[in-house]
Amino acid sequence: MKTLTIKQRMLAVATMIALGGSAGFCDIVYAQGGATAAQSSKGAVIKGKAPVNKNVLKVKLPKAREAKLPNGLQVILLENHKVPTFTAQMVILSGGLTDKPDFRGLASFTATLLREGTTKRTSKDIAEQTDSIGATLASNSGLSNPTSTVTASGLVENLDQTFEIMADVIRNPTFPTEEVEKYRTRALAQLQLQRSSPQFLAQEQFSKAIYGDHPAALVAPPAESIKKVTSKDLATFHSAYYRPNNAILAIVGDVTLKELMPKIGKAFGDWQKGDVAATTIPAAPAQAGSRILLIDRPGSVQTVLQLGTLGIERTNPDYFSLLLADKILGGGPAARLFLNLREDKGYTYGAYSNFGGTKFRGTWVSSSEVRTDVTEGAMKEFMFELKRLREETVSPEELENAKRAIVGSFALSLEQPQSLLQNIVTQKLYDLPADYWDTYPQKVAAITPGDIKNVAQKYIDLDHLQVVAVGDASKARDVLAKYGKVEIYGADGKPIPPGEMKNQ
Image (cartoon, rainbow, N blue to C red; front, side, top):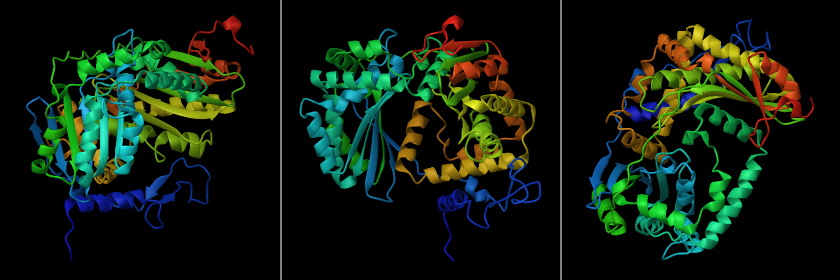
């Protein structure tokens, strides 16, 4: 009988997990006498779970190879010879966090407009030439990102051509005035459209409540920045930060370092290095006292809810405990929030939680969209689940289910070049240990119920909980007032004095 490799065993287990709804594998049995005996999903337990073989927790991933060009460009390659393709990402170590306080969004504008014209190619040329060789090319930077990225992918047989186009876009953008004007028009229209989205309004107000004047408070570029940006501004930012000694080129693909380096040297070897100012990473502000913020949308049939607090940096030792705690609380259809608010109460199509962190503290937030008439019930259940995670120790079975899901997802991600590439970049950006991804499953497996309770008590800080609701204030205000003083805002983000609110 053929012996499976560790990676193949991991993938097999992950596939079984992904197909867990198949008959005979993952049957739901209700505590009140079986699936037909009760409609409520409270007390549901998962029977017939496939055990996770201990070998699944032993991963030995291929080691990345590293090199550096004389101009300072760091090169990282992870060989992957399954298919004749590659994915490359140029990571510029300056992003939205580099923006000046009076010009937020400049890094994002620069990255977005890189491919709109170079000294050799028009925007149309770039699109047609990448399409003709079956390649992709994209670039972006977030408003509070520490980096800007340009990503290209395609067939290895077209690697030289793809690198030539990629290098041209990175090194020689001209930011044509007409393209800047087109972008300005689109961005302002998009900003206006976003203000009609209750999800956008909720995220905007939540970010402001958590971060104050920090760059992370922004979820969209300020209109004043969009209006004033010029081709010269973009060129100045590009010249200052898009330098080889301020960049990492990470590649996953069917190529060896010996084959790759001459190609990289041809495309990027004469890229001129320069003095680059270091980016100061601002710390997240101290948590503000608990607030309840209500954005009024008269006549709305839904209330969008977000409840959350400050979380952790990516390198925090609590990362894996919080990863498991979040999975249990709201990390999918098997999590507590989903089972409670959707399956048991029928308040919503879904209720979730998520957390994140980069060079500064991120957030841990729970959210859902519920019918207006069940806003009160939804708030009650959100608070119930947050307090339950803080006060009660999770069962070994519930924790084991969460571990199984996370390890399975990780195993499946090893088959995706983009995930492998992101793993490389994450390890380098955050200076994680060399065996970080090799030992990822073991770190997940090591978390205990006590660890979950500790991080829940630490980061579900009810004294600093920020609650944001978007809905009909005339119907939601009294409900939310049971949890504290309610501050009411309009869709423009400005406070509405009580006497001026519509539908009093």
